[in-house]
Structures are given as structure tokens and as C-alpha cells.
Image 1 (cartoon, helix red, strand yellow):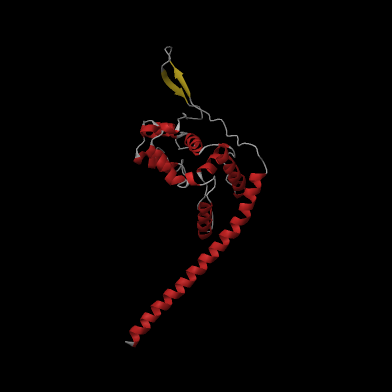
Image 2 (cartoon, one colour; image 1 turned 30 degrees about the vertical axis):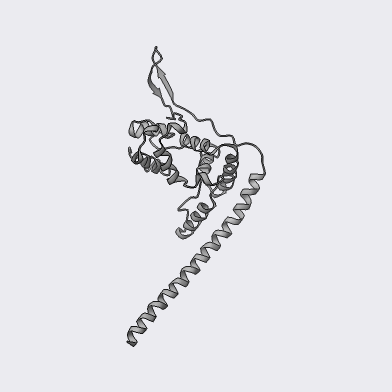
Length: 230
């Protein structure tokens, strides 16, 4: 009975020590996150106030179609860009929902930046000892691809976030999402979801199903290494 009592006491002591260590680690990570976020938040707000100019998004390059003498399309000249613009209502709901779920589930609830996602990414990066996860919203990704020329440095995050907040006040959410889906690179030379749907599945963006949409959404973060045609 005594031995069994000590065994139970030992388990409780082990559990208690482990709980204290986890709490301490959590508090430490939270402190690091707060210390990192505070100056960045101040810089973002200051950068956002420093200019009242509208965000000027790049003009999207498109592929060129070749027509016969009767005006019927017979081919296309892609050059460096294979892209065809589509409106949001020309994209299947399955594709829209999947991309939002994968890239920015809070898209319709934030103002350009997602503080929770940034904090979560910082915690993950602290645990990994390096840059393991980003916290960019769809709006930030659009700014990165259309304004900042794919800037990737930590110092680029402040203007990226400030411009994302400004763009959110300039365009409607659906306009931002539509532009994003026409801008993002899906690999295999395909820019925008219409070109990607044609390249990988031979269908229009309006016909994408759940499985196809999941594959395309997975390519956004790794369009080269994830390209199934390579």
C-alpha cells in the first residue's frame, strides 16, 4: 500500500513539474511574441499614416490569342505569361472556399492583416529556430506579388502590412479576392486560376471540383516543388 501510494504521488509530482515547465515555456514564448509584435505594430501604423496615396496594383500581363480569318480562336501566344482573367462568379465555389481555407480562413473578417496568424507564425518560428511559417493574409500576398515584387525580407513585412491595410480601404473584399486569384502563380507557367484549371485539368475555373481545387490550393505555397507535371 505504501509503495503504491508513493507511486501515485510520484506520478502527480511528475505531472505537476511538467505542467509548470509547459506554463513557463508558454509564458516565455508569449513574452517573445509580444516583444516582437509591439514594435512591428507601431511601425505598421506609422507607415500606414505616412501616406494617403492609393495603392497602385500592377497591370496584369495576359496571353495573346491567335484568330483565323473568320475571327475564331485557333491558338495562343503565351510568351512568358499564361493568364486569362476571370471574374469571381466565373470561379467555382469549391475553388474559392478551398483557397480561402488554405490561405486565409479569416479573409472576410480582417482588415488586411491577421494579428492572430502573425502571432501564431512567430511562435512557430521561435519553436523551429528559424522561419518555418508565415502569417501573410491574401491581401498581403497580393501586395507582395503586385507591388513589392515578391519581396521576402523581414524588413519588407512592415510596408507589406501597411499597404495591405490601405488596399482593404480602397477595394471591396470580393475585388481583392478576384484580383488575387487572377494574380497568383500555380506552377507550370500558369498565372491565375483559369490558366491553372486549363493546364492541369483541361477545364474552366468554373468547373473545378473539390479534389481539383485542393490540388491547386496546395500549389500556391509551393508552385515549383509541388508541380505534379515536373
